[in-house]
Image (cartoon, rainbow, N blue to C red):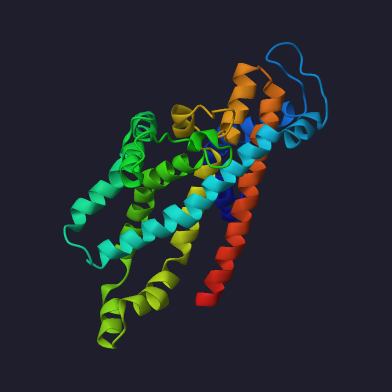
Length: 295
């Protein structure tokens, strides 16, 4: 065996454990779920092949379509709400535009350290009929009998949850952006200031072009996290009332573990996977366009 062959063999041996681990925890579960999605498996007995029947039923189910709409709203809030707001806060802290920056940084990051169940209980109390939001609206409108009916509206019921998600996760992106801003060469910004550049000019011409890769990475995290959103929403509303706040993960959970339709639930999970892959591919295409533009 030649030296080059020995070198190649050593690479394969080093990669083998990682590849086996990846296959066992990622590839095998996805492949098994894909195979179950074409069956009517109910948790016992031999799975019966039914082709695309599960997918046809799901795509024709109004509850699923509403769950998909809710998931896309969460993606939109994450990508166009949490990330821009997190970047803005990180920029303000990095440029020391606010006093006591360490205090605000801690307070903004704090929500993500709290259990989603605790967060759900907290905001359920705030949005309850005797909570702070209702009390404020009653005082502002001078209507002591006001009752919040937003959760009774099929289209609006998800909005309080979107606000809670924005409040909870913005701090994560702020920390990521703040850490990356600290890596930037200070002399570059100082030279721009000496040349008379304003904060907005430095932001648009120096900082943002250097952060395209980081923004794309955080967007991938936001998309993947949004599509698997479950714990907070399930703790707050359980997907109710009347499926108004249901997302695909809850839809899949109910059908799989409440109605024991494992094949049906597997098909729903594969739709989540395909949706995530599609959105991430679109994001990567857009990010490459921006990277070429700023080269």
